[in-house]
Amino acid sequence: MDDPVAAARRHRQEHGAAILREFAELLALPNVAGDPGLDRNAIWIRDALRRRGARAAVTQIPGAAPVVFGRIDGTPAGRTIGVYAHFDGQPVAPDRWTSPPFDPTLRTGKVEDGAEVVAPPWDRLDPEWRLYARSSADDRAPIMALLAALDTGRSPRNTIVFLFEGEEESGSPHLPEYLALLEDRLRAEVWLICDGPVHQTGRAQVVFGVRGIADVEIEVYGPPADLHSGHYGNWAPNPVALLAELVGSMRDEHGRPTVAGLEGPDPDEAALAAAAAVPGPGDLGYPEPDGPPLAERHLWPLLNLRGIRAGDVGEASRNVVPASAVASIDLRLVAGQDPEEAIEAVRRHVAARGFTLVDDQPDRETRRAHRRLARVEGVAGYPGVRTDPGLPAAQWVCRVVTSAAPEPPLVVPSFGGSVPLHHVAALGAPLVIVPIANHDNNQHGPDENLRIGNLWYGVDLMAALLG
Image 1 (cartoon, helix red, strand yellow):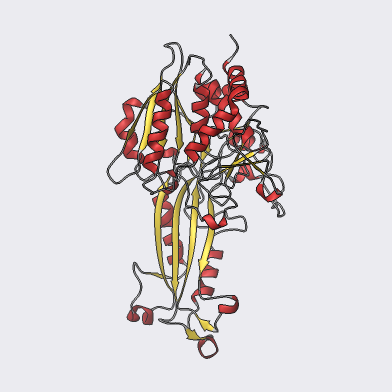
Image 2: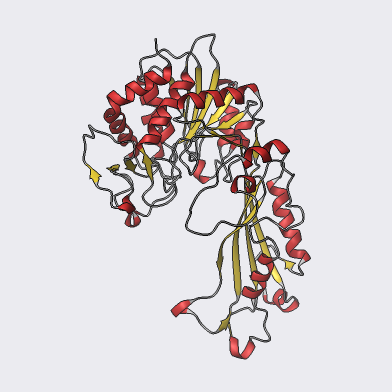
């Protein structure tokens, strides 16, 4: 009998159109985080798994989106592997999509390159073609890959326990409760997080960590109302200027925090060596910065300024000193940093720069008493996580991915983004990220897409995991 990857490749070559048509059924179900349509997604996934002999169920905590959980039984001699993915997606702005976000559309390539629409029944498939729909890549693709792998006709050697979540895009607020509720059913030797993209070169990657996250908003106050700039510009505190100066004191030109308490632990030599071996992202349309490569920077904390709101610009601009200015910041935290402590470090920094901190909008008396007023609000997400790639289970995952990938995978010490691995770590097993989506999939944006060749890699990978 041939190996599981060879069987998967033969199956998808013979039944690729049927796999894609079934995937389109799932992608046609709206799945925006927080939407009631998530229930339909969960039921569809459960039923698809049950048709293939898996033990699958849906459960739902009051006030939360449902999860799909269960197991695919292997042999007593096999391993037990956990697989996590999520079926919720980001909001959509249909008017910004080339084709409707929940009307899966196959194209002969990238829409921006003028790719043509391929009409069903999709009997011939090119691996460079792309399927356009919300969550085609992030993150319903791994679920479809597992379903297709179960159709190869081979009896699994390894047992798969799975958890498919419906709240990842809204921060996984109920994931800890679900994991505590299902802990006895989710025991595994290693947990694979099937989320994120492959490398920008197109090579598969095995990723051993993620950064954590905390959100911060800083509002700086000026006069009680907008003032004429000519009359008062030399006199009134200008919150835009104060905020710009403040944010400039919090980060270097590459976004690395200069706030005391946000330095983060230094990466070990093994992680630095692994990062140095990861190729750069290639041409992204702007000059690369000087200094360490991107993969090494993912081992640092990041203070990202994601937006400032203050006054007006362009034709709407007015000659005023605005009453307030707000900066929105995301903190990307490495393993060992606590999100709550990171927010407190920001508060201490703002106070040390001479600002009086308030908890609410300041009243007129408070404004009269202080020229530098600020409010800092933070939301602690979750910590970063790193897995030792030298662990036996981690090495096994590397071998499995190597058997399924078209070329040897990259071993990456950490993603720059944030995934709630910290919650899954409570299950007590090593965590490894094994992405399948193409890097240019437009995740979270209009025209999200999945390259067909990446879906095929996902099928091969799931077949290899099943053994």
